[in-house]
Length: 166
Image (cartoon, rainbow, N blue to C red; front, side):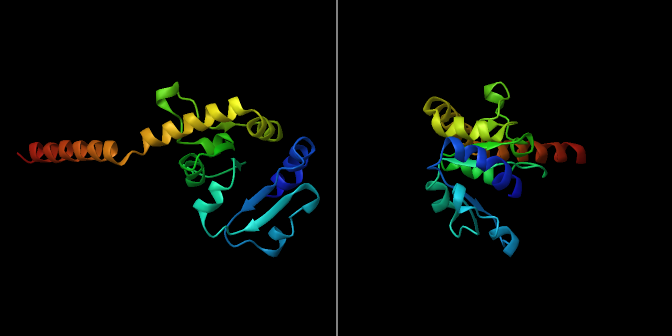
């Protein structure tokens, strides 16, 4: 959060002075909340209470993740709620869309400030990534399709065990 508020957001604010950054996270310390910068519309809000409500009030998820493993729930939730995530390779881990040439449905950013401004201002860019993310989540996490695939895999495994026991 510190890098986002101190390094990235001042650059975004210069180009989008009306846009507010809200940083959510569980159990913020006093030092965390003290990072809020009203002069650049950056608020370290702490726990959001209702993730769905918070996501429905925003356009982008800015997630400059530097470490972690596997799929990031916050990025998937952003797609589910129609947001466009701007994130790093770490944030995109496990979320490459094999049906779209292995592309990450959101925006991978090396220059976070420029990517945030472009994603916020450019309706074509935002719309393309938002639609891609929505399709990706619908296809990848569809209960019916995944339930059938799981049932088929379990049946095949069961049959292989039966064959191995003979």
